[in-house]
Amino acid sequence: MKPTVLLLLALFLTPLHATDHPPAAAIASAHPLATEAGFEVLNAGGNAFDAAVAVSATLAVVEPYSSGIGGGGFWLLHIAEQDRQVMIDGRERAPLAAHRDLYLDAQGEVIPKASMDGALAAAIPGVPAALDHLTQHYGRMPLSVALAPAIRLARDGFPVTEHYRRMASFRLAALNKDKEAARLFLRQGQAPALGELIRQPELADVLKRMANDGADGFYHGEVAARLVAGVRKAGGIWTAKDLADYRVVERAPIRGRYRGFEIISAAPPSSGGIALVTMLNILSGFDFKALDESTRLHLIVEAMRRAYRDRAEFLGDPDSVAIPSEHLLHPYYADGLRASMRKDKATPSASLPGAVRTDGGNDTTHFSILDQDGNAVSATLSINYPFGAAFVPPGTGVLLNDEMDDFSLKPGVPNAYGLVGAEANAIAPGKRMLSSMTPTFVRSDERLAILGSPGGSRIITMVLLGTLEAVDGKPPLAWVSRPRIHHQYLPDVIQHEPNALDNTTRQALQARGHTLNEQQPWGNMQAVVWDKATDRVEAASDPRVEGMARVDSTR
Image (cartoon, rainbow, N blue to C red; front, top):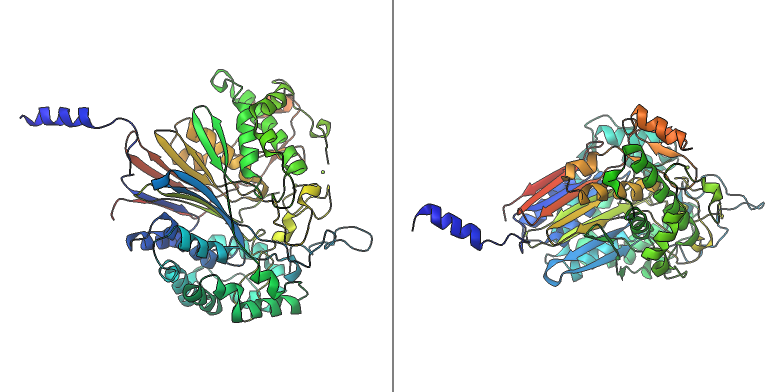
């Protein structure tokens, strides 16, 4: 048979729809060393979930301003063999001695920085338990293999980058208040020089204990005793029981549909999935292609405004409060919200029901992973503000989070990111605080998109904009590079990057009654897509920061 005939026959027999396995693995993360660590584990025989452990732990070492084993996160998993999705909730919990008025003074006013700096700001970490859970239930390599790159980098050091210097300079005063934090992350009280090695031998020892003993190496024994002693000596309220009682929770992700794509995203205590699907439900009622740019952006902002109002009013820890998820996610509810919108006029936030009273940052971190079996992970991790609580219990090397600030310290009072909240997110013993982290899958029969970003209160709107790009069929680089706008209900302003609006669009939005506020570029989106129709895998890392995306077909 002639070669041409063989080729035509092969093309005829090759299915034009989804393939079963991607032709390559891909990892996009916020730091090149973390991406390399993930591939080190994949190449050793691990799957996407083992790689997720490696990337999480490595980011905990090389991005102390964004995440750490003293923090928490959400890992959204796609288990290819079962076509199943699950969210691993490794969010921090309030200590059992916490109470509603923990950060209020005798007059009932919020004590400045009490929920942000120092030992009292720290909630009980979830990352160590989550990494052990991923390994035990979804990985195929020992935890010692997945943690090896992070242990090596903590012991031998990693070089300081410009981004590290910016973050350390931003939190210089807080870091200098704690002797251990200043010793580890600063040099003579200042941000280290570019290229200087940051070594964390005590953290390496803690990671080794976890490699040998799993989560018990952190939540029990000598490490736990040092954590509790250090926190309590510095004015915190942790107990050994707080650590011993910590458990991850497996949760069903939030699901929705938009223009033929299934949206799978983070469930409460993340507000991300509900807010994302609410916004997409609203926008599904408009023919975007028939609208000019300013009208499209106006409608996107109006959808953001309404979703963030609901976030403030209804969302919290699902194990502690009743959340009307079914109602908020129903298309009929979106129809009602859409009916309150006008194409020619902005809706003042103060006119929306339940009006109560913000900036975001690049802290928190995200990574996206696809392996050659089709397993996928979208994970967002955080210690909240840059360098968390800026506190390290002596002898541990563990930088603690300041996630207690993500609670509603007092109804109507904004947190560090300007987000307001109601009683649903009030402090209570053992409660998980509300989050904006939004790890997400966007999929159809022919495409799987994996995306997410850090960025505080702006995370959800970044993922919304990235999702709109993905649904339009654009490549991952377009998702992560798109100029960003943001509205979070209160304050009633459109925040936008310098290049997001041209003069015509700016004037058209202002004519509708919008207030504009230009901000420095924000976010650090990491994205992967598997186009099953073309059998192609692509990945992209946000050009605003220093991450790395890599696609590799060797295994």
